[in-house]
Length: 129
Figure 1 (cartoon, rainbow, N blue to C red):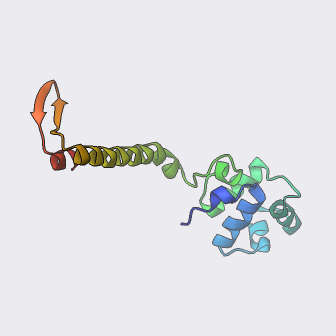
Figure 2: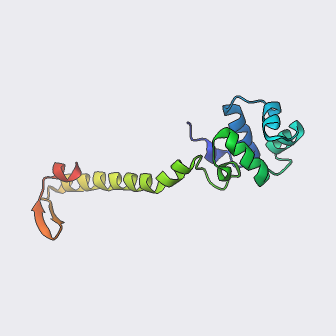
Figure 3: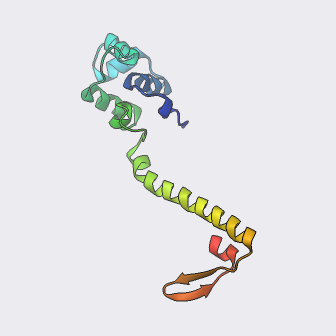
């Protein structure tokens, strides 16, 4: 799924985005969460506030977190939210490896690493794999 949420900063615009992704009309969404079409329209236009109750009902229909609909964060699912710290760590580690490879390659140093209190000589390719 495209990551367009950061540009969508209001609950109403996120509601419209997810409703359209679900191929639902305002009438269908209103019927599904037991409210009026006028309320859905007003929420999407930003004239009415998206309440916790309506956000919870919509999140169940759209399969996204209520906090995402309410613009508290951009994590659509609990799994995505839980995986983000790990994913950020992996990206940082890959960037560190690339920087290290560049530095060692430019200067032509031998690499000696300490592993479990034992010195171990490794090639750069062994270290970076």
